[in-house]
Length: 97
Image (cartoon, rainbow, N blue to C red):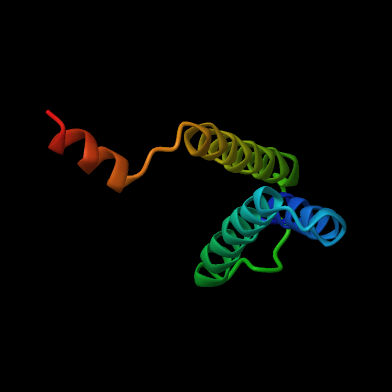
């Protein structure tokens, strides 16, 4: 059940991406779909895909934590992308030393 929160975030960002066509939103959307897909595979593997446990509040809270972790990873990616970190720049820096 914890995969439902990142899936809701993925569907929301899909609509947002449809309006903006922003590459940054595309990254976020794909990360949300990846997070929800991995959760679905885990639940399918354990035979709990459509099972609602007695601890559904904790499951949703776990989904919120997963969604926040994905969002934080996306923000870190954006910060690193602004710094223009690439292997070529790294190698060029090594050659100049």
